[in-house]
Length: 215
Image (cartoon, rainbow, N blue to C red):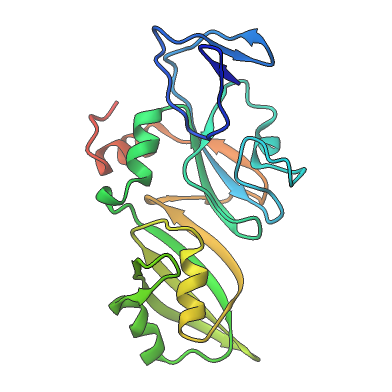
């Protein structure tokens, strides 16, 4: 994609619908004010990107039947499954991913070993991340099995691989990770790899959450 003749490789790049000239594969495209909001139940093995030279499969392949151009809101790792939002509403996407708005993400993590309640409490107090920031999560133990524990973690930031870093910091690396909800939006009955449009009520919920006028 190019904007005013400049090649754009960054997901979520914002354009001026009234002034910018946008082209895809050299062909001009008309910008539209029609906003689209999608939730995908992401499977493992797909990169959260419009394109990636190192991976053949991106999440955009799962939306190939969608006629509108949208971008992912934030990202999920290659092996992480669950709720992933898409939209062409740039301002909403920006606010949903900005730490200032403390948008809640809820994860289900299967981790190695037996996690104690004391260890789970450590996460709420704050753990140093590799980038020097302090990561926090409200964690609860949902269940356990032979050599593993299932945790639910609630975070208000979306730092890169934050859940994995938090769990590793308390000595229990992640085996499998699923995002149950983002900003209150859930996959519901969606099969893995399937998507749906958000309802008007869900869109209004998102806009109110980040202090945008509903509608």
